[in-house]
Amino acid sequence: MTIDKFKPTLVYTIYIKSTPEKVWEALTTGEVSAKYFFGNSVEVAERIGGDFIVRQPDGALHISGEVVEYDPPRKLTVTFNVNWPALIEKLGPTLVSYEIEPAGDAVRLTLTESHDRPLSDDILSGGRQGWPAILSSLKSLLETGHPLVVKMAPPTRMLAALKALGIATP
Amino acid sequence: MPRPEFVYVSYIKTTPERLWEALTSSEFSKRYWFGTELRSDFKVGSSFALVTNGATSDIGEILEADRPRRLSYTFKHVLKEGLRDEPVTKVVLTLEPYGDVVKLTLTHEGFTPQSKLLDGISSGWPAIMSNLKSLMEAGEALAMPPPCAEDKQ
Image (tube, rainbow over all chains, first blue to last red; front, side):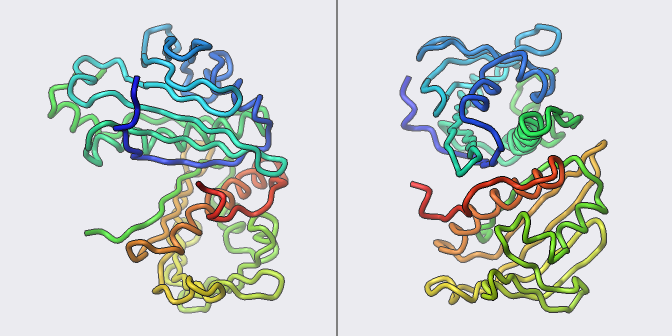
């Protein structure tokens, strides 16, 4: 798929005391992601065009997408579509990219969320709230062995904006 | 049009009191701020300076000091040519308990469009905040050089 028309709406950089290989493993392995990603397990096909899937702790499909860039342990780009009825039709696909670079004895991880059309701040508030919590927990897990316990619900302003667009949410 | 700003949110396993102490301690700041000392008594109206190896890079004034919830100060770069002519900006730090972690929100605001200083602080703050989190949680900061804006392509 072509990603030229996608524009970044969120860039979040975090430095982690780890290796690029361990950060890559944490981003692409379900058992590890379940520890820092609100219990969600990721499944990433090891090839461009393969499936990217996120399952909730009960196994239900939460996010589905496609692997767009696959360059371990440097770069992973996927489409990242939350499985809520009508969401993709109304908002278009979400693109998520992880870039992993060595920085001294640490690793710089840069997350970029992009969209192919303008979206409101209310819609974008979900990613802006969620990603810092997820990546903070990932850093804690890799550095201390313990993820953070951060309980959060989707932002009410995002849920209201989705509802106004006719997108059903759980 | 809102003026450009930089926002960074980090979740840190600590208490608001300990985090406040870290954000306002001159000795402690050297350990996570790449050797930079925060010089201030952090009382409203007091002066604020960032000093690295004797060189002052940024100055300001404490605007709010609501321990351990909210700290803000003005921020004016005074060292590098090309940056020191930019107008005074503002840094706001809020600390909110979130279960057994603290949500730290940093907002650096008041930049002009095409600000060069905004590029610099946008690469600096994530490294400083990452270091601070490592120091609070794992007991030591990261072994890495300070980032510079030129690193970004």
